[in-house]
Amino acid sequence: MDPAISSILFYLFAAMALICACAVVFARNPVTSAMSMALCFAATAALLFGMGAQFLGIIQIIVYAGAILVLFLFVVMMLDIRTEEEDSSFSVFRSLIRMAPGALVAGVLSAMICIAAIKLPGAGDWQNPLCQVCDSMGELCIGQQEAAAAPQGQLPYGGALPRLNPEAAARVLNPAISDSEAAAATSIPDVKLLGQRLFSQYNIAFVILSFALLAGTVGAVALSRKIRKD
Amino acid sequence: MDIPLAHYLILSGLLFSIGLAGVLIRKNIIVVFMCLEMMLSAANISLVAFSRANGVNGVPVYDAQILALFVVAIAAAEVAIGLALIVAMFRARRTVSSEALNTLKED
Image (cartoon, rainbow over all chains, first blue to last red; front, side):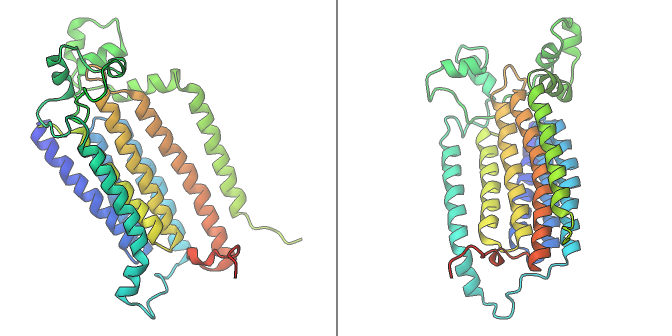
């Protein structure tokens, strides 16, 4: 995609995610919060698609916007919660006083994160993807080893993300691929690369994760079961 | 023009802070829980951005994306348990306000 369009889409979806996140926090009705959360997760999924992580974007939609959100809505509607019962003596000033400590902590945290991100070397560098900058520095590209070997503060680390390289990805997936086939690759085989890593290097962690999900299911059933009094 | 890594990190930090503000401000436990989920998904954004930024030769580092996948799976398990706890709390106290959880507080 044209880089200009993709950066416009990035800022559009980022603004949408932030606005919907504020709506989750400040909506008085929990159903409104849940719906805003759906929009926030959809915008986050769009951002993941934009970063080339298609699989994680789809997982974000299916798991967060599908499963988790439906659970939330189900509980909100089952419990039939009234909006917060403070309306009788509601005053703007008192609610502001009540919000002040939380807002202060969150504001300080976000300011710290923003300053740290802006101060990353090369953070204002919009033009040069990392790879090109490194090429000009006389290295092929930044790998983790090269990053560890380079002196601190030298790498343009906060700069533009490197462009995805379908040819190199095809070679990683299948080292025996011929040059013409590699050059014909047009998109990153995201799911294949992720699955290859997941089922080889992280296979044991994956199995342990499935046990955690099983424990979660059993725990949820045990918690929501009616306890007999006899 | 490509988007710098710093902008992804700022977005992720802002989303995380909004979630934190919700956790600290709101009294309704269900909304607090929603904000926790938002914090997890904000962390996922920065994981994926770092996986792109650290990539070798234009191929992302997939370890970070696998970590993000694990975060999503654990978040799903956490929601199941947490909502069961909230339903149990509602049965016991007929409210979901976090101010009702003051049994251990000194009088």
